[in-house]
Amino acid sequence: FSMYGVDLVLTLAQKDSFFQPFVKIGGAHIRKDLIVKSETGAHKRSDTEPETVPSAGLGLKLMITKTFSIKLGMDAWQTKQGESSKLDYAGRAGIAWLF
Image 1 (cartoon, rainbow, N blue to C red):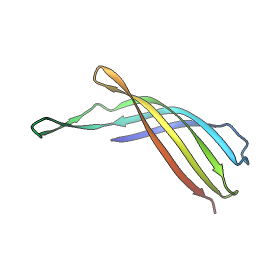
Image 2: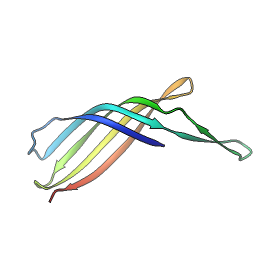
Image 3: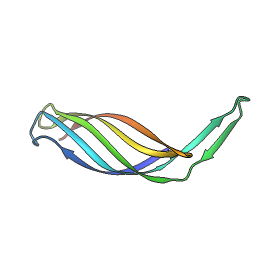
């Protein structure tokens, strides 16, 4: 699985606020390699076509100090799965310390 994306992030608070919720919209280019297991235990690798899909997310940034923050977020994107589509998602957490 590999994914590259571009997002526009809209922060819903002032730059110096402690609590900074945000939303983001964008797109991603995704490539998946699927491994299929049968009842006999055999493995089959299936390469899927790379696709460009819409993505969206939301999250929260907590400014502990002017130079240290904690960021939490959730991203989602929709991909094709055969004849139907599937909604995939990922959670993110991180810290930032500016010198």
